Image 1 (cartoon, rainbow, N blue to C red):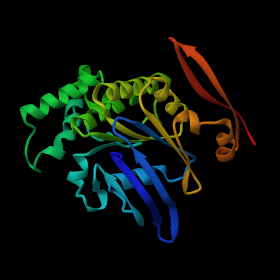
Image 2: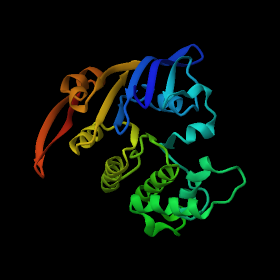
Image 3: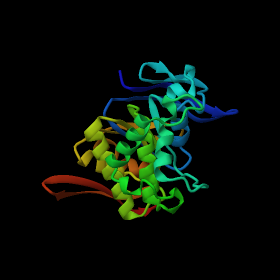
Image 4: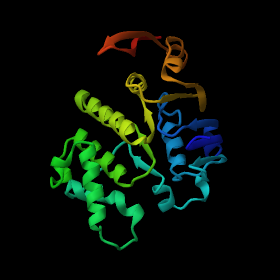
Length: 267
């Protein structure tokens, strides 16, 4: 049994189903990508995994517990969340943002302890941003901001990290920096990662690094296909789901065979 299990899950707003009859099993230490067109329900499914939205039917378990019966602090001790976008209204220091990840382990009005500060600093060191410790959060770039959010999630010390399109607003270099940081974390700490993405090559990137990788292709309110990236990201599936002619290419880099799906034209 996986660390996250989604069984016959359906979610609706009113009478309209956003997704229906979803079944997934995500294993410990795996990077699992949710991929599909706009509006297919990826973000909604993630919010259901976090207990923010309640399923209309079916169930989701984190660990061996049904998320429906869990209080937010209980969820926060099992799964950390990185949103798609994030406002930065106040110039908190970066370390203060990371310390917010410790609230799942403290009472409401308790100040951070020396242990909390040590854990937060170690999280910043793991993602390579300890040099930003005292910099105002509002002065960080998009890529630096995302790494601060990763550090905040790590400070929660959860076995699961759930991310909703975390590279959507990053430039080419910062996107790669972010993906490299995720791979290092999985290899070093056996985190389980769930990541909604619009970029299929993210899944190929993870698979190419040798870490355990899974992928579900969502479309028409359901899971069209799931498996390893190489099984899911085919030219035929890109044509059927996105109406895109594409080409799957392979190349060798540092004695590894890497794959990419290249879009050619729409039809």
